[in-house]
Structures are given as structure tokens and as C-alpha cells.
Length: 244
View 1 (spheres, rainbow, N blue to C red):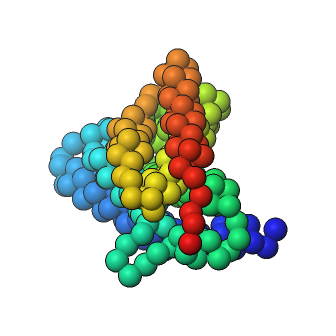
View 2 (view 1 turned 120 degrees about the vertical axis):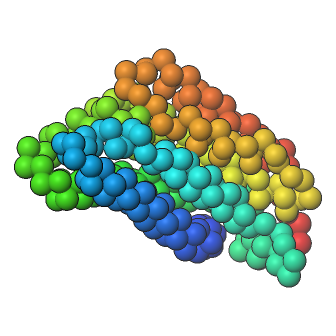
């Protein structure tokens, strides 16, 4: 058990600072963009701007998507053979099959994505609180803000509430992307560049925000990312193990 924890910790150390940095960057950029738009609207003589309009017309999804892609790219780089570094040698010394290591690393990468999404959902709630404090909207309470999470595509995908199909899609997406990122570095250590694995992150960022009541879409996306997971597992298993 200790040797499995060691290889898992190796991946976690390679991920934690990238995850924290990009999570904080994304939250700060989203907050800054929202604050600038809110402040500009408050200077107008009209009534206080509607928070749903602010979020729907802002660049929140764009900021989230770029940071999402950067995080996925960072996950793909964990364990790469680069100038002056050969992680394969370290993995061989840990006496754990590199195939098993790749699966354990995929679990770490999937968890990192889930943490990123959860943190952005929390940041969205803070934006709602910022709006209420700045506008003085006493009518806005927790229930009102949770309704907003049904009305906004990005917010609903980050926190699907009782839409089970969206929760399933998100977990399948995290599993598929985690295995794809792990397969990318696994194959790079063998001198192969897995471009399809790299492209999954861009595709996921593009389709991540989606509206409510999209059961068919969620099921289709779940199947697509399970397919991506299966392809990545196949690429890992057919690639053989590293020999020092």
C-alpha cells in the first residue's frame, strides 16, 4: 500500500501548485471582470442591473474556459520526459507497474478537475454576494441565488443542483480527461505525442457550459467521455511498461 501511496503523492505534488494557482487566477479574473461590469452599470441612471444579465452578458465562460484548458494542459505535463528530467526512472524505482501508476495518476488528475469546478462554483456564489452587497438588494437571498444557478449555463454546469444527468456528465468528463492527461504523459515517455488526448481538454472547455433540461445532451457527453476514458486505457495497456 505504501508504494501506491508514494506514486499517488508524486502526481499530487506535480499538480497541487498548478491547481491552486490556476484556481485562484480564474476566480480573481472572473471577480475582476464582474466587478468592472457591475461598477460601470451602477454609474448609469437606470435601475440597478440584473445579476442574471450581468453574468449572461459577461465573459465569465470565456475566462473559465481558458483557465480550464490551461489546467488540463498542466495535468498533461506531469510526468513528461524533458531536458534534465526522466520521471520514468523514478517510477521504475518505486516498484509499481507503470500501467497501475498511470491509472492512479488519472484519479489524481480527475480529482484536480473536480476541485477546480467546485472552487469556481464557490467563487460564483461569492460573486452573487458581492452583487447583493454592492447593489443593496435585500430581496436577494440564498434561494434567489440558487435559482440563478438554474438560469445560467456556466453556473448550472458548475453546480447542477438536482439535475442528476449533469452530475453524471461532469464525473464522466473528469474521468475521461484524467485518463487522457495521464495517457498523454505515459505515451510521451515512449517518444509518442498523443494529439487526440491533448484535444479533449479544448473540447470539454467548449461544451462545459450548458443549459438545464438537457438529459439527452448529458447522456451523450457522458458516453463520449467514457469512450475517451476507454481509448486512453487501451493506449496505456498497449504501450507496455517502462524499462530502466
